[in-house]
Image (cartoon, rainbow, N blue to C red; front, top):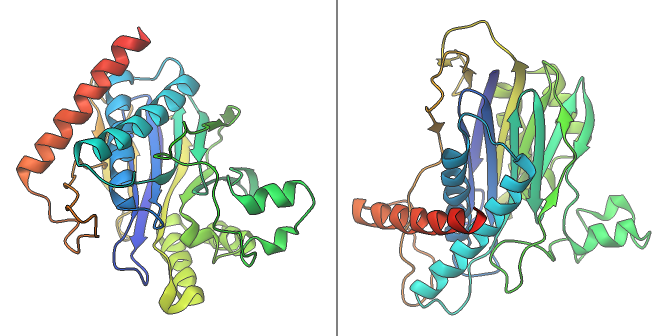
Length: 322
């Protein structure tokens, strides 16, 4: 398979960037994940990072070189991430459980399936038209669905930030799965946090993506979102790919001449090779639960401990699934 990919995040006007994004791939499978830690709860960035790492670890374990049951994989991976977040809270004696929204997409054999919890979104775009989009698990979306609010109120309604589904809550998350989507060369998959979609209308996104490469369109959309939100801007994050399908190229990672966009061709990869941009960094929560200004300053012991904990939980989950 071959695809071009670009990802970017901006802290906006916040003290901590609670958004996380990344992708993993094998010869025959590609996983895209984006998480937005919820700022109304302690250490949302921890929940987002744990979710990303858990899902990535499960992908590396099950994609050999493709995932046999993609829908079940996404559902099980989200539930495993939810459990990891609760285990982290217990291990660190936190007064509240960190929470995060999540959206993930698994692509293999020219077919995509995605899942989400919360209001982090996925857009499936072809020729300037949105063929599919996740529906936010929010109070305002429920009101719109019932005809009690207009779609134009999505960005202004007083309840627009109230979510009823996420990872890390007291109850199990409701993992919403898409139907399988058949991809064609040129199709775009855009994953983004609410810091982007709440500030940039769908029509503006489509115009930008239709007339520019993702390496130019994504930064342009982030700048627009930041400018619209002003000094109070939320974290703004996007991960996008342009799908090309099967490839006759022999390369693996070919850096383009613009920014950090990468053209990836996996045809010649061995079956057991996994590659990922999702890191394994984690920190311990401070006793007072206050945000750490040096959230990204991880040390080797903390990283190794987090990896060991996640892998142990994954092994237990795998034994249960068998």
